[in-house]
Image (cartoon, rainbow, N blue to C red; front, side, top):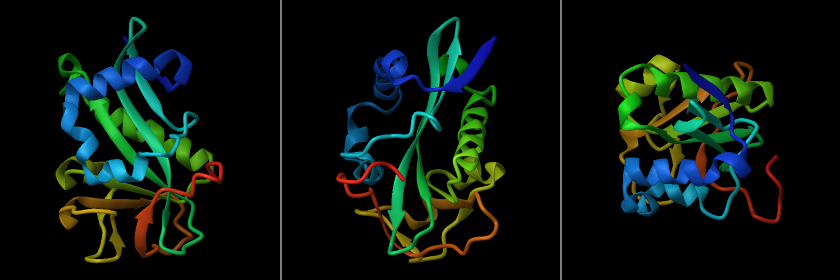
Length: 170
């Protein structure tokens, strides 16, 4: 049985980083999405890990992000990784779904992700309008997706960036 729960950084961080390295290889640090994560702290209360017999077999991290000058409380989703022996079972979707549930509970209003529209649309992500949200580096605009977690807000626009390091996560 696989258990999905909040990340405990002291207990899970090393195994999660090893999973990311196995899944994405050393080049994942060069991706534009990494510019939104570096120098920031993820949100353990929203991060989700999948455990099988106590071992990390999947992970989805959530990061605070600012978009333009908008006051909308936004998060960046990812990386999402599932150990190759556990793929094809819906575990990645389950991790993202539970992470987004936690984000809603924490009053986050928008989730941004860079990923496959085919994979993430069933989870409620929609393409960002051309030029509406820009990332700090080159990125295929068709892979920039968002989901409103609060139906009462308008979609922000502008450059997505990590919050200034002097501030704690919202």
